[in-house]
Image 1 (cartoon, rainbow, N blue to C red):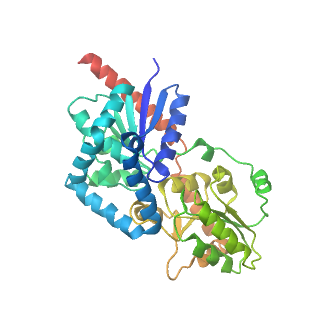
Image 2: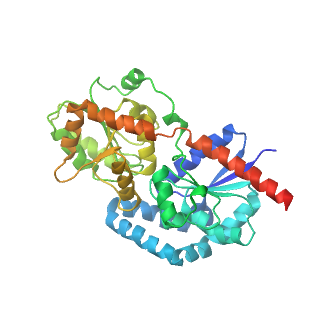
Image 3: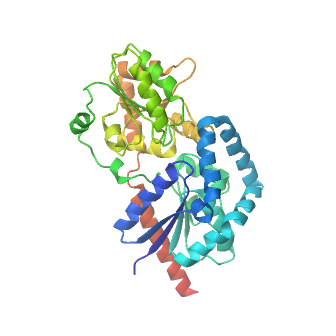
Length: 380
């Protein structure tokens, strides 16, 4: 009998939805009936606007404020204040959704819907496996709930962080962060260069996430100021106003560097294949995609909070270079250009950390948890 999977996500940043879609791809291959529901939109469009737009605007325009809230919410979670509030706001509607869908398992790629459901699992209103998927290389107390059956995390480092919050290690599976299968497939480098009219030279990709966060204008000017010979691809995501501004900026600058300004593009897997260095903020999905494609990262900006903690993971494992007062962005690029062996060392470390089968492993784990749950129900 076809198994029914319910994936609960949220649009606070692009990573949670992308992970949900990647998981659905894997469940489709397993012949499961899989539904993705944006939990915040389902509960209340206004709540979605407050949380999702609030995240986007604060992360982009007042990142320090967002970082302060991130740390504050961690403290509130430990005291159960935020936990209780969320269950009151979201709990009943999410429960009704689950009861109407009758899934065999529930997966949360965002902590809010999982938190909202936990009291109902505790009292037996929900009796199916609940799996929490962490989409960053860090752990926040919001993910830690007593009745979660399994945690899918990016690496063993995150498993130890969850252990610090009291999670049993036998519930944690360091399978990776699920991303689209397109990032696993190989691309024809020559065809990609031809499609984007790129020259055969060192290529720097500059991006700022799905909504163009980060000081991309100043970073672009820094890159242009370098005397070294390389081409630049700028990806502004859904921020088309930024794309327009950068196009105007480039048209008014006398630079001998080839520069392409792109908005949102579905060709990210292909572009990362031909890139030599990715200049970006360290979102969980972006980091995973870079590792799968083996493109070294240089980090000139980040959103305080989970991305700041992602940097800890990346630097601790030698997977990225971070700019600083002494190490300017042009300097970091020039060091990698002059020392190809250093670039290769980063790529080799990425290859050891890459987990291309995360979504498939997660799907198989979930199906095994369903079988285990059904067998125990028959016995009781």
